[in-house]
Image (cartoon, rainbow, N blue to C red):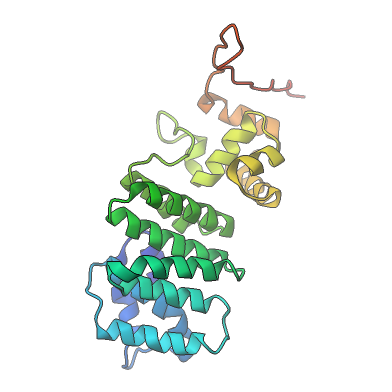
Length: 265
């Protein structure tokens, strides 16, 4: 598929639709059947997000994709079909189709496509100014993409809540915008920030609703990106960007516990 999915992930729907159109329509550049089935959902989404009207051509492509999906070759395909139908349907039916797609995703292990559906639904809700519901879907999308390591899509999903009236739950950027945290994805920033403040992997996992194994995976990547080898070194690397402890009142409320950093060997 080349750079088209990356275009879509970066929000360049018009470019993605233009790149994918020759692969899905009859002609000398039409893709092999196996590639065609991979391309159709991206093309449907790109075309809709680019603002093109849903027409009989899109409906025909979805119907053909649905016939293939009904054969059971790809367990996640039925949910993708429902997402595609939701994207081209009128408002009266779109929401039910998105909800049905998410329910089908729950039955199979398809975290990437599941996150794509959360993102599409969240964007649909945001365009209809249903911001509270949109933010829930967009947060689920960002978390799903991050667990898959789909960094481009993670950044898009994490940025979308700004348009829905929310600042994403990322740690504050450095004043210069070029500090250590700027090298990391939003989810990696949250993990690095928590670990540097003394949280264990289990505590981070519980806070972000992800598995401990996922935290460990991200932490290895964080160490690599920042050139550190230990949690202590990570804390020292991020020290200029960590918040100062809050001052506690007489009841102890408002205190942020920051665990002391042991001296360097």
